[in-house]
Image (tube, rainbow, N blue to C red):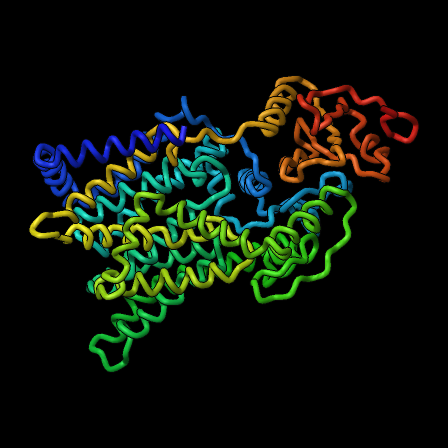
Length: 549
């Protein structure tokens, strides 16, 4: 399949080269039409959101609604279910040990370990009929915000091009929209912050832009708080340097219109975050993800920190994940290579093969005063991302608008290249855009990959089967000794006792009698999660509550 894809690309390049004269005419017409459209900035912003939604819906026959697969997705869905029921957290369950699972706090309250922004997006989707609707809407908001941000840094027609590239690379066909893992919310926040900056610096009326700056920072604080803080620090510095010297005329007016709205939004955000932490962890200054690291992981955050001692756990799956897998992957001999692979994945996520060619224009970008701040911000945030042990592409989500502004500016520089009077840069820039589209849509390309459906499909089918019955159920999950710890079945709704299906794990040495007595009114089932075809089996217990088989 990869060979076929490369063949298609080679033929496309050859045809484009041979048909330059013919292509010049219709490519210029397309560009002129794009220029006319780009001047209608509001239409472009709304259109970006609509294209995001409509195009992804059209892809549903080929890429259906995702089924949660990663531990993080189930945790985010728990947050969404909690918020959809009008609560910030849930009371701990007295039998929590049987429901204990990855990335979920069981005490002092039962809650997701993650910041609340993505959970709120999923809650909106759940109230509208399906959590994925929230994901779809957040991706649309991201595209609109990126379009608005690029319009603040680039000429209108180039902002339109950058928006289209962002839609192709990180919207339609990425896991940001094909999972419940997040990415779009933080990207929206980063785009609002970076888009507000040039408008605040260069315009007189700044109240709206200051509000959007504050909203963007609030989204970052509640989605990617650490990365968001690092992202916002250069923005705060440049605002302090450029906007608020006391000797400048209209100092008080600038403070009132350019800073006060953002300060009010951020003050409200800090209050909410403290209140949320207090409700979840019992301490306004203790974040859920910090508490869960203390209770379950005990892992370092930065590469220079020494490894911490491993904890002990009630069930072997936690030992396999937090001790065997995590520490081998990130602290063993393969740690450096593992991180290198992760960062290479991040670069390929945003750039891909075609856009990577634009790295050749890096010397021009470095000395380009118009986007110097964006370069500084990208290098600043990128350096810190290199220093953390854990990394996934959505960790860099706040940089989305920054990255695509730099990509677009790189194309502008490339377009100016000439070789003995031949406009090689114009040809190369157009070809890169064509290749981005071709690599996404071609067989074996970078984009169209249906979401993973293996063990998670079996779990989803079983859950759907039980949901269609009139009675309530308790499903006991049994794992084999060689179980893959990334295939976790035990995740529950926010209201465990009120749910039609409750998932619980068998724990070696732990009697099930208290659990079975507590749920005596439910039909009890057993699932061998590591069977070739997992299926429900009636659970027959002896006097101690154990299944003799």
